[in-house]
Amino acid sequence: FPHPRFLTRDLRRIIMSIITLAGSPSQRSRSSALLRHAAHLLRSRGLGVVELGLRDIPAEELIEGHYSGAAAGALRARVGTADAVLISTPVYKASFSGGLKAVLDLLDEKALAGKVVLPIATGGSPAHLLALEYGLKPVLSALGARHILAGVYATDKQVRVADDGSIHIDDDVRERLEDSVDRLAEQVSPRGVVAHEAYDLGRLALAGGFSV
Image 1: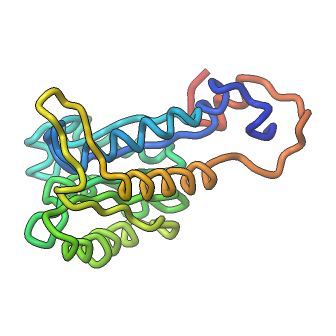
Image 2: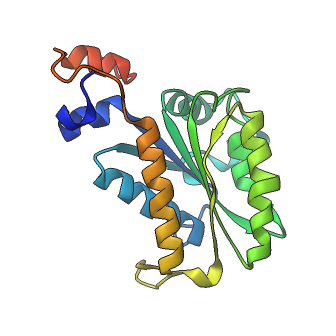
C-alpha cells in the first residue's frame, strides 16, 4: 500500500478500522465523554472510527449472555475487522463496570489478538487507577490483547459534563489522552511501502474488510 501521506483521507479510513467500546450506558458518563473525545481526535487525524457501547446490545442479551444473539454476532464481526480498540469504563467500588464485563464476555476467546488496545477509565479518586491496571488489563490480556497502551485514567473532578452535554477536560488529562491517541494512530498507520506503487479501490476495500 502507499505511504499514508500519499493517501486521501477517505482511503486512510478504508485501510484503518478503529472501534470504541463504551462501558457505561449513560451518554453523560465521564468515561464515555473521554472516549468520544478520543474518537474525535482520531477522526481529526483522518482515521475511521466506529462507536459502540452497551446501548447497541439488548439488555436481555447482555444479562443472559446470549452469545448466539444477532447483536452479539454483529459486535464480534465489528471487533474482528478492527485494527485497534478503545475501551472506556467508569470505576465502581474498585472495579470496572459490570456492563463492560458483560460486553467483553460476548467476544471470542482471542478477539483482541493482534489489535492495539487503549483502555480509558474514570473514578472517584486516584486510588481507583489500580482497577485499570489489575482489573481491566488482565481481562483484555485473556482476550488475546498483547499490545495494550498505557491507560488513561481521570478522576471525576478532572472531567465534567455540563447539562448541555458540553465536556470540560482538565489540561493534564487532555494532554495524556492526546498523547495516547497519537501513539495509537502511529501503530495502526500502514508502513514500509513504496510511495508510488499503483493501487485500486477494490484491493484497498478488501484489505479493510469491506465488501465491494
